Image (cartoon, rainbow, N blue to C red; front, side):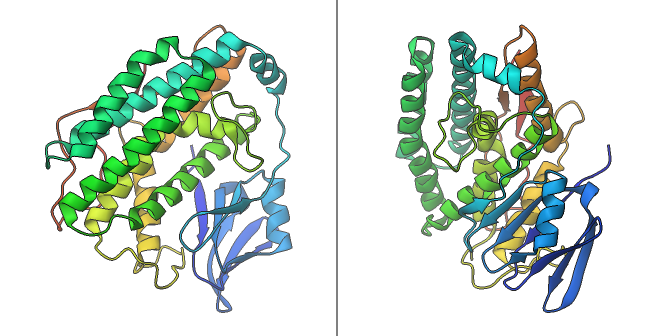
Length: 343
């Protein structure tokens, strides 16, 4: 399989243009890079960057997800695509199947809570953090309640855990760095947006309608099925990466703009995107990269729509290797938590 390229525009004043079937990234009237449309996986533009009508039309013709973020990496909007959805009939049928929706939601929530527990356990070796202990107790409680929970209760359980889990990660960072951990929130938002962007690309590739989810409800902007199928991956691909990145970089304030051209990452935003792309290309289990594992997972969901098989989310195989906390911590590496399919 040929390697696809994600296009990031992070420098204010950058413009994405198109000529024939090629995207061109310009900054200060200088051409930074050219990428064939057929070799592009998705496009991300930060505040102050532009995309021309020609480039938008080219992205639309190739069903390429285009995401717009503010300067801190928080969601602003996206290009809404009307792509072919050959599995729409099966999706609509499954949407009317309460057993399928319930079973899939239970598996996703269970895998997500197991993965969060694995990450929290990996933090325990560094220092005693009371909020981490509280979060672990809450996750154990909700894991026991999943088999008897209705769909609304599953959503409620997940929301409650969110209110405990992320404060626990923030307190752990504070205890290990004695620095305010709030900038890590921007990393979580950015990582989540990038993860959903990759997930949406795979859903488009497999001909699935991103709006037909089960666990998440649509608010008119989010893509429920994308959030359903990436939720279990947030722990390893977003949460852990953000923690390690925060520990490795003392200055996380955005005091400029990156250029997204791969030539030297002088800015936290560029460095995080570089770490994100490096992580996706990391070989993990079965000689597959994280990107390939996520693609395989979404392919499994497609198969569950058409065959009498249950969707199996990704679990993290935990090994007792805590996240390094020294100021010399290396760039994020996630080999201590490997995602493997539920057996």
